[in-house]
Image (cartoon, rainbow, N blue to C red; front, side):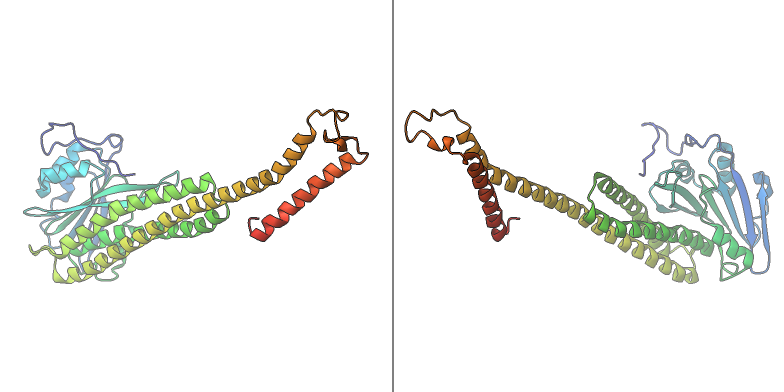
Length: 357
């Protein structure tokens, strides 16, 4: 599940602290510069190689994989005029997806979802800066990157991405993050469909535990998808001129995707809630069936136990004519057992006609 991370109370604003677990990761920086006619893509070792990328009219996409170099992040912020509070949010992973406008750039936080090594749902924070001629994306690591389709489109020159500006690139990155919800939701949907018959046929504790895990996963997806919709909506209503009208048309499509994702999540949550009720009802019905069978068996043996108890008492047959003279009958045992069988069969027929069994 998403975990909220924070500084120690009383820490000064804009304090940059490298997250635990990221200090041993050396950041990898890649630069892609392109326009309608040209494309340059390379890895860079230092910010001094970014001298001319802002002065020209090309779109410069700087991607940083890793948060282990604090000096690099500070230098990046100084070079491109990134706000210190935005840089602080970059390092505070686990942020709620959000959009924050500043004087000379926009800052966006998004959450990528994926399956970890154990198969559980996990997320990675992506921070995006949009400036006049540059886009900076900062990821926690490179292994779960979902931006390869965007890179392929840039390399192949397909679509409008090569003729668009940085705002269109930001749309493409957000769209890649949002669309990555669909495979995860499709997987969960198929699992929930199988879970319905599984719970109906065999409502075990393992099935109920799996169902609870799906509910937790859907809750986590909702916590990420809902604010993603707010981010896209904020970009749609930008009045600073950073987002062009042409890009807003595509952002509306991304907004529709977030609405569809939220509808799917809510639908699956309703289904899982219904499956929980079905599980409880099925368990209750099976318990009732067991109790009914046990009750029938007990009802059958009550008169039989009474007869066995009566004839199990000690009587003196010579004391009088009413002192259980049938104890001396030569077929007394056979008659007693036969009477018990007739009583048991009669009770079964009676219960059957009543519909109790």
